[in-house]
Amino acid sequence: MDTHLLLYGGLALSGGILLTLYLALIFWSPPPIITHDSEKKYRSYMSKKPLALTPLADSSTVDLTVVVPAYNETERLPIMMSSTIAHLTSLKSRTFEILVVDDGSTDGTSDTALKLAAKYSKSNIRVVTLEKNIGKGGAVRHGMLYSSGERLLMADADDASRIEDLEALWKTLDTLAPNKGAGVVVGSRAHLVKSEAVVKRSFLRNILMYGLHTILRIVGVGHIRDTQCGFKLFSRAAARQIFPAQHLPTWIFDVELLLLAKQLRIPVAEVPIEWHEVAGSKLNVMTASLQMLRDLLIVRANHLLGRWKAVPVKEKAD
Image (tube, rainbow, N blue to C red; front, side):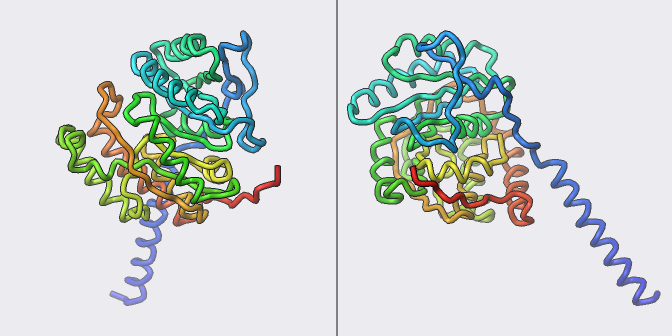
């Protein structure tokens, strides 16, 4: 057989495989996250009609925004809100708002959040209801893009993390990103790996955790020991660059955020926090494992090929 024919055949086959992989990447990549007009407004105890949210591009109006993604959280949200309000109101010198992002719940989570807003009427609690469920990552992204705080805390509705540990993250961010610079501080449970809280978790959850850590080293964020803790603090300058470039709406979105921070050369620090398992998780371990692997490959491939990339934002003087 002619050598040139074999060479051309091999090149054609390789080209076909690469084209197939690229088309598969396009097919499996999530579509752009669409923000509906109704989702740009919030409800609160202070106003009977929906009010416009503050875009992230605007200047901050409070010191802190706590973004709480919530999907069917009528049972767990009141507990989290109680501890959060108690701590934040004890800090007289810090202004804050709490932004509950209802991710298309079917159990009346928004109504529960509004009742809590009435209960804690002296605190600024805002409730946004997404028109449909898009995933935790999408809910967090939406909350961050419409936060008023100079610093933005991502906190889960299950109250698994202690709100008091915010102070350790806050102090670290003071050092990491002074003068309103860009920085991210990640709450970490890595020091609890051999603790009773983690040992008592299901076998499958622990297998998932160790498998995730291995894959993270491959995709480029192995320097962060705990990427998945739902307790992260962002400066406004960092959030302005990271969240507009976020594509993943699924639960593995934290990894994309850290990859974006690395790409943008935004400093990231990890701070140990206390944490405990809370019943009522919506995560299906087996389904999540397959989705995790797919999404990590998708985000890494899109970044390597330049389909997804973040553009540094030059901060304007306030």
